[in-house]
Image 1 (tube, helix red, strand yellow):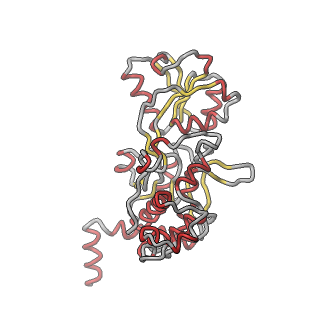
Image 2 (cartoon, helix red, strand yellow):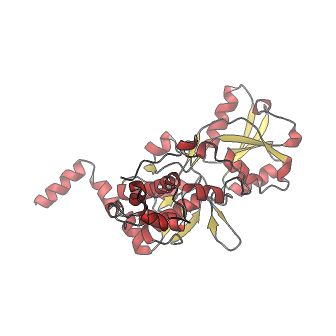
Image 3 (cartoon, helix red, strand yellow):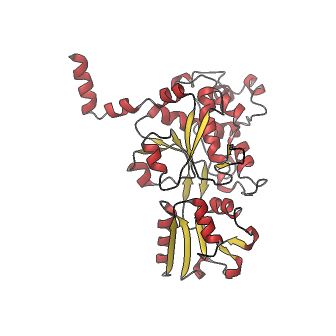
Length: 337
């Protein structure tokens, strides 16, 4: 009876729901992989090659979590999702993590039963047009037909921008990302709008990429990052700190190439990061070499950025605001201590 009374008290305090759903790590360990929701194909972020292999900065977050849990970054499976269906897939338990160029907003954070675990790419919405259109500013686009994905913040942002500037427009919202690209490429619309990083990626799919340009205006804030379900703090912590480990590793100069020798470092911050000092992994239900495994098998944030979206990739994106805070950017992770 005392046990039942205790459970009843927890339920009355609103805690039992969290307890009942706090099993994601156990489920993931039981099946042997992390199920990750990704885009339907966005180069640099989450994209599949002809061999069926996934890569990108969002994919790296999933692989980091797998490395932290299993010591194996390949212990992942990927579910391509449209913008419209991504949150339902996460809420229903179809996926364990949503890592799909998804913008962190108040509504999504407070009303959908979801938690954003960090921002792995700071972005802003832009507009791409054919050079033949002869415009150099978004303020010259009154009366334009605009293509974008349905179920995204871009629909709201573009509406706000045109209304605020007293300009007319027509919106063509399509669910499938590649269909949006085809609609724009065929001339069905004058403008393609999405996150500026997305424009850089989708531009590569056009028939003649060099015939198109991104206008200078940035009309929104788009902090993009991984998302998990609310109610499982352990899983939330694992996903969040897997990402933070990559940020801290870059700041401390620990990379996939030198992480083994860094195990003998005298720097206490590095010792805690690579698991030589403390029990930071076991406190989350992992082994103490969780962050070592992330760095060894996935890399630090800088390595991932350079390999997926950086200046030497087809996207050619400079670090900009995605540089470390110590180098003038916004990427900043709390310390492991």
